[in-house]
Length: 448
Image (spheres, rainbow, N blue to C red):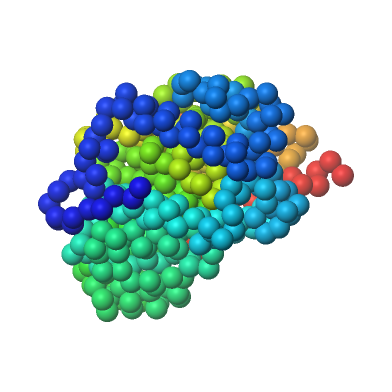
């Protein structure tokens, strides 16, 4: 059940007993929820009953959290196929349609958009968690929060209701043009805003071009970001913070579960998971075995409460690392240390794995560069070749060779990858108003 909270501004936690409980208590809570949730899925979802039976597993077999590894995975492709086979929601749904009160949908960038249904209780639980997460990031009832995410079926849209639940004045701005968004932020002196890391940078640059000083003419002190790895890359976060004079907090969510299900507290060291809603696994993509804390692996999620459409061992495709060490804020929930990229974004250059986020950390750390970059992959004589395009911050071309050599050296020492570095004038690369496209792969037809 969603919690009912008073909104005393000086209390540090939204739900202190839950957020500061021991790891043993977290595990006991998750195990109890997991058992009930698997029984709900098996009894009410035709897909899960058939899937579990085919794998020779049953909810009664779950005696520990590790037993989740007996159960089969599910992927986005399966969600799409089941939805197309039995429209509009597919046979993963475990409640009657009359109990569904809200749906979000994926963007459809990799195929047909998939709907994510919610019951009234699912939705209330989600909003209570959004309030808890906003509170952990320092949002309070006396804040003016500007929600600049898409409201058109996007699962991040309703998250604004979490800000309202904790008592903040909430401005439902949506995806308006940048100049209009800046005018809204200036008129109402918004103190917090949520967007993507790329757009936070772009919006700050746009403000300066409009003769608006983000630090002096705007009141924004907190920027919540999601949708890209940048918010957990210290170099990127620090560049955005310097531009705005505001703190940046990274959030993580996906339409197949709910809005934001992990986020930074005011310590800004990792993203606290909604462990009372989601069981988290981080697995080696090849062996499917758990990785050690601090190691990179694929994020696999199992819902623990969402009754409309349970998600059992959903392979997200996101490459992350994590820790269970207590946070300086006093919260004890598991923390994600960063989203390093996606399996489908991972590049293998001469046997070395590299993600765009690895390059971004280098580009944003060098203040002789604008921080914008693009990766171009080509194949020459059956070998992949990486070119990194980066922008110099100044118009002077005299130092281009020095900048390129310095960047190439940092890239080689940090990632082990050798690349051709191309220095571009400022404002050459396109700026993103949503998620930035950082990779241009020119290898599609090399074997034809």
